[in-house]
Image (cartoon, rainbow, N blue to C red):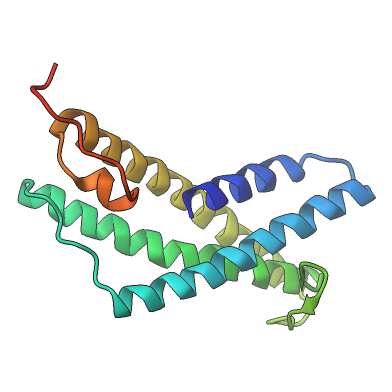
Length: 168
């Protein structure tokens, strides 16, 4: 998910600067395809979480445990809000989303310039918040692996062994 989110964010940031052209429209289509895919993968992930609870967090201070849970909750909320706000923005702009060129998704709202501005603002803001939380999430996982030497990162990457030995 982190890789998809990063790629989608990178393409989204870069494509807006391009001059209007068929190439720019293709980048927008790829960005939308990735956004829809992220949303669908989120639904699968949430379904999996209902079936398979995550392993317990390693022992850590209460504030870190609370921060980790809050960050996870916000990540899930934003992984839903970002693609939905993009879909709403696209709908309000009058552009239909066709996932992978095969399935036409319904426009969620009618074309409306005022709504377009609102949904673009929401999409831009929530995308920035999501990017910050993803970087924070990754940085804390690396901190747990390299400094705390616990199994937290190994929970996210199957087969990864925790670092052992004294801290340097």
